[in-house]
Length: 298
Image (cartoon, rainbow, N blue to C red; front, side, top):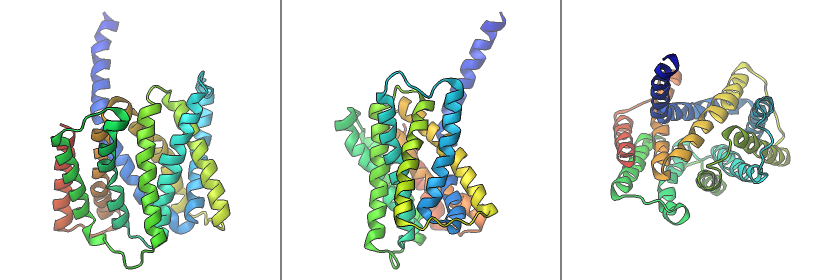
């Protein structure tokens, strides 16, 4: 009797967690931008990311070794995971950091990144055999328009360089290719093993590039260490695990549409934590973005 009584409860809890996954993902992913804002002033950008990825590697390798998930039966799992790590972690995040360093405003970077759901929707039919409905296209279009309104006051190209826009485009290519590759080749892999090897590849690539192009200066302040820990654990492990779970279960267009909620959520966090402005246009943009994501996920 006891076991049969527990089964429905466990099923309900699982259903509740699955329903809450998109909300948790958006909240955790959005905090990453604020943590980067705290940490980057205290270290060279790529050095900051390399240390972040290394901490995540130590945690994930230790955990996988403890539970016996470090050595997959199929060696192809390692190769696929490393490709995702280079694209979705090293390329995307490094591209964003370098774009900001080369004068591209946060608003422009957010707008460029906002093209990812649209590009993904255009590619999933040929690459994954998924159909994107007219309603979903409408939702994706509204989502992009909402992001544009949210970041409108931060849209500035005055100090931006050609290299900066190149890095922003590189970041867009990285996250788009990385999520598509994850969906296509890594859906059946052990998530713990996959994350460990993703970050091994990301740490190796980022460290190599940082050592080549930066002085690797770091000021170990309290703010820096807090930002480092938050990014390494909460965002790198927590948010990416949620993203992988959603990609495994859901349609690409629906999952990637959630990225449209990141700039509005970050703006709200920035308002309460850093006193950043949040005008009527940004609030209207949030409503438009939420409507778009809702339509894309119908």
